[in-house]
Length: 244
Length: 244
DNA sequence: ATGAATTGTAGCAGATTGTCACCGCTACGA
DNA sequence: TCGTAGCGGTGACAATCTGCTACAATTCAT
Image 1 (cartoon, protein in one colour):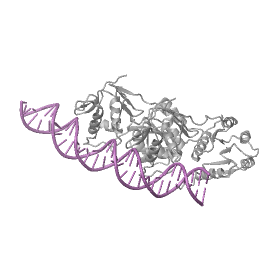
Image 2 (cartoon, helix red, strand yellow; image 1 turned 90 degrees about the vertical axis):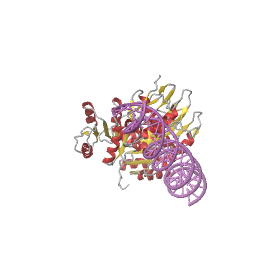
Image 3 (cartoon, helix red, strand yellow; image 1 turned 90 degrees about the horizontal axis):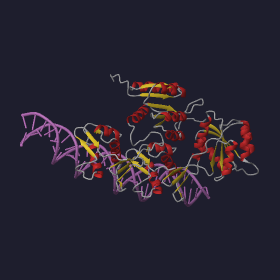
Image 4 (cartoon, protein in one colour; image 1 turned 180 degrees about the horizontal axis):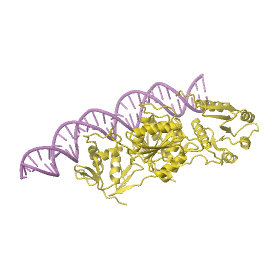
């Protein structure tokens, strides 16, 4: 990347955990965003006074009497800057209230950086056109096929009997991309672009390996794949039948 | 190129950047396509009303409240004209959503004109059976004939007794193309176009081989084919009776 | 920082497909 | 009816491509 790409957007991060702040800062800066991070409500207020941001990532669980929801409400009172909340995994109430308060999306901790990036991009894009009615359609829908359940939000796959299948990030991403469009044949190049950040190099069998690993975990008989089939000379297709 | 060759296809380009529009226009016109280019969503709508096109090249990043994805969705709602999206280099979310919305392919900016031409040709050439680019859900119907069941979605063929027949990618594609139009005679050239990506070369018995292999797997008596018959001097026909 | 987990590479084995060569059959005219 | 030019059927083999195991390089989590 020879590009300067320094202004994808200005992000303000509020989290009491310094490691999380640093993690987000580094990642987003690498991605070409300008990041300011603060550890408490006052820092947030000061920063918002001092500069303008395109989006705020707001941790809802703050120590010491601080309350993320109040802060969100406070921000909303004076501006309509997009807010993405970082919530505890199962904090359903917070999520709901958060969206009511005017947050644009929420991400459950622990989260994957790639996921956060995706959400940020989505929100920023959605914002560009005037989007006066904040409550956006919540996050993505769950995909069901042949008894399996793929939950993009929680990033987990469960079998017919309810058992959770342990997929790695990469495996999950791969499955998600494929399963979203059953019957569509994806080339390796497309899969590479859609699941990795990296660049594609000519003779690369990475995708094949990943597919093999994924099959091992989800295909009853890896010799005769029923969910993910290969299309010689082209790539792979998801052949599971979507159910409602 | 002495020929007038003005009808390779009619392309509609939407991009807010006039330079890009011009670049694409000139290039594709040189290549014998008829190009109409517009700079915003309204232009797109008007053009689609006014004339018919073979393909749409759609920039996803539009200024001023316009949203390429919405436009793509809008187009899909009323027609199944092929769409190729022009996306930002790393915009994975856009790519995924774009494909979900029903785009046929995407090209990351900045792109090479050659590349665009290649993709356009590919998309136009084959509305391939195996590459169901039609609207997302449009899972195809299952074909039944003489007890056999051919399921394009799952890419599998089952016999009367429910046993799955193990067909290779090429065999499956071949059968699918033939079985979709029982009684229609396909020349070898058509079959080559419809089942392979490669180019056709004069003396090629590839199709014959593939047919032979396929027959071996599905014909009760390969000597006297009952499902796929040869038409001397022309090609092959599928003669199985479709049943519902 | 360090060990564990995940992902990227290599390379061999097995599949699948592209070509060739050879043969039998069909169409057609002498 | 016989002979001949072509065409289609096949088996054999080479060229490609995919599956998989093993191991190295990275990334992640503590």
